[in-house]
Length: 230
Image (cartoon, rainbow, N blue to C red):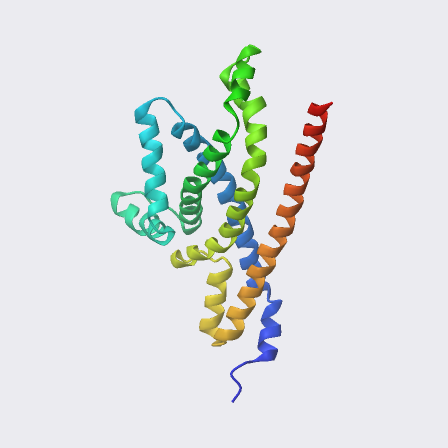
C-alpha cells in the first residue's frame, strides 16, 4: 500500500478551498502589518519620550507581548476576555492578537531606526527653525525608513507564516483549511505538503518584492549621496 497519493496531491494543489485559505492568509498579514505599524510607531515614540511614566508603559507593553507566546495571547483574547464581558469574533480576535503582537516587535525596529539617524540631523533642522514634528517628518523618518526596510521586510515574511497560529481559534486561514481537509480526506502528508508549497510561494514572492524595494531605496541613497557631493 502506497503511503503517498499523487493524484490526491495534485488535485489539492489547485483546490479552491485551500486557495481561499491562501487569500485569507494574505489579507490577515496585510491588515495586521498595517495595524502593527501604526501602533508600533506610537509605542516607539512613547519609548523615546522624556516622561518616565510614558516610557515605562511602552517598555511594559513590549516586555509583555514579546515575552509571551502569540498562541497564549490569542487564547486569552478569544476565550478568557469573554469571562469579563469582552467578546470578539474569530476574525476580530485573530487580527487583534496578530496586530498587538506584531506592534511590540515593530516598535523596537522603528525605534532603533530612528535612533540610528545622527543627532546632528536634528540639530541642523532646529538651526533652520523647524519644529520637532517637522524634523521628525521631513528629516528623521525618511532616513530612518531606509534603515527600517530590511528588518521590516523580514517581519512581513515571518508574519505570513505566523498567521498559521490563528488556526488554534478556528480562523480559517491556510493551515486551518488544510486541517479541515485532512480530517475529511485523511491525506495528512499530501495536504501538509500542499500547504508547505503555498507558504513557500508566498514567502518567496515577498522576498522578490523586498529585494526590489531595498534596491529602489538603495538607489535613492546613492542619488542623494551624489547630489550632496556635487
